[in-house]
Length: 476
Ligand code: G6P
Image 1 (cartoon, rainbow, N blue to C red):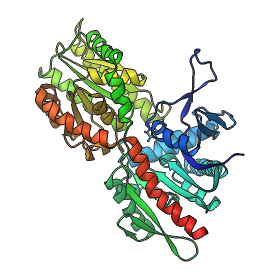
Image 2: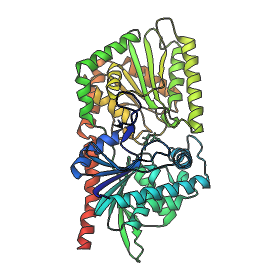
Image 3: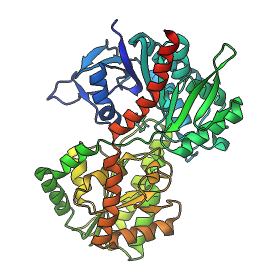
Image 4: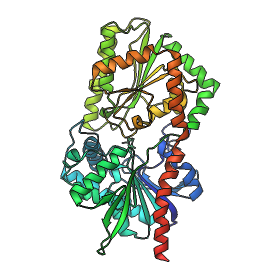
């Protein structure tokens, strides 16, 4: 089997199976995710490989090449999907790491599956990596992979990036397998987080649970021979491919589509927009509550405003997501029933996912973007909105519980739990004069444009390269 100098390991491969007839039922399509775009240039330059799951249970696919990247599928059985993906990853770690917004379930059977599947990913990565190569592990589904991989391949330099929050110690310590997970992560040379606070929470958990010493971003990890090695745990906030959003936003057909969207909504004076995976971390219920009250109190009028809520389907077999969908759809139905007129709707609710062109048109059509997450690693939608506003107009309302709040200081900041405060912020955004919109948006755009996703991956890989060079030095 061929091996690569640079290997990404993620729960998902960067491709999806096309389901339409145009490309044929078995064709692969590059998936639109930010990580894929972020890593694409490096993957091509380094002749890299990507180890991951093809997104369907029981699918047996041999490794194959796709647009310059070598893809190594990891098979998950239907049972693995249920216990490792839906269970431990998305019904234990996900709610625990998002501050227990939904109650995490601690199941020993799920944990066993998590260990088993993480080992499968580690073995696949070990087999795919060249002597002295670099492996970059992605996200919470694979926290045990760094340690497992280090044991299999001590010659390899290992990075790990955590895309979601790392919780405060008081919450993290609930996890029955808290020590194993920390040890798993510490198998990496560099452990990257979204926010400085996440890296701090992690270091504290390491001190409290493992009693390892930490100094600045360095953690002294026992190396098994009585000595220690230093692992780096630090914030590397992720970003988006800003220029691709700008290009789309400048296209005449996309701008025309934005006008069409406004028109099809009855040309309201203000369009508010929410774009989220349908997830309880996103604060969609809080947003609807605030908006519904503003309509009921007559502070907003359905003849003047419309809220477009795109809620893309996600993890649809996990109980908390099924319940959330029911609650949101009930609430949307009530608000629309109470306020809609023949010509105007209070909420245009879309339980669908859209291509990037359509999203940028929506961003251009929206006067106010509502990001009301209760907890969010970064929230890339906030950055996508900002990058798309080439006209320096529009208002971003942004939760301080999203990682993006650390960087996007001139957004209208909110605490989504404070419904009165959220209502005030929505009113302020709806009424904001164009000059103030411009001042704030220009500052937001400066930040997003000067720190794009390529900077993110470069900075992370530069930090990792220090370990790579040192290791080569030791070996020779
Ligand atoms: C978040 C996670 C990713 C995950 C994505 C979609 O952004 O950080 O790791 O891929 O959600 O969720 P899914 O469960 O569909 O992969």
